[in-house]
Image (cartoon, rainbow, N blue to C red):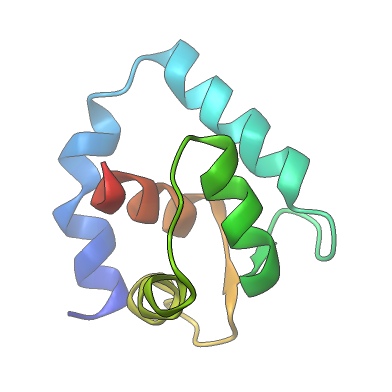
Length: 89
């Protein structure tokens, strides 16, 4: 599945979030997007997901990054990170 297909597939789940939930998720995203402004690095993805109560393995993280990273630069924007959260929910 391409990154774009992943985002599209889980758009309905993302649209179902309340504005408060989106704001909370965005706040957590921004707290972890330290290295590159407004983007999560592969290294920052684990603590971001852990803060949301998830505990992915190293192999799972690699798979998630490969699936969600539309540009292939190993940097995740908010929409890509939300796709991962929706996938893991």
